[in-house]
Length: 167
Image (cartoon, rainbow, N blue to C red):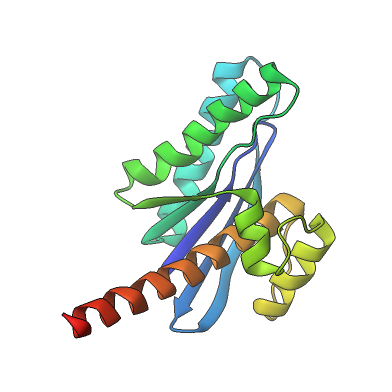
């Protein structure tokens, strides 16, 4: 299973692609997409075009996107939500199923602690994907989102198999 993890951001959108073969994970690629300057519509278009290219280049068969948390800056949260819309739209346009994970769920799955710091996430991503060198913190977060999805997909598969056997 090839998974793209996406960490939505309006200025910088992180992405990471991994392959999961049972419990084995392998790093494929990662990066950060910068939206550049300009009005909101132009920046969203830049995210869309670049993320479309990443998906075409790496051909994932599943996508996972981090959910947005609401903070005190309502306008900032709304703009982030629009970038998240692009992060969900592009994989859906490519025909990929898109899963969503809360930031704390990603951190708990990858680090073991729901309120882990960015450095801890980066460290555990490097441990779980030997030879991986994230392009930056947003790329490390995106790889963590992909790892989280791989874990949850495996668990769901085992559960479905167990229920099917028990029936």
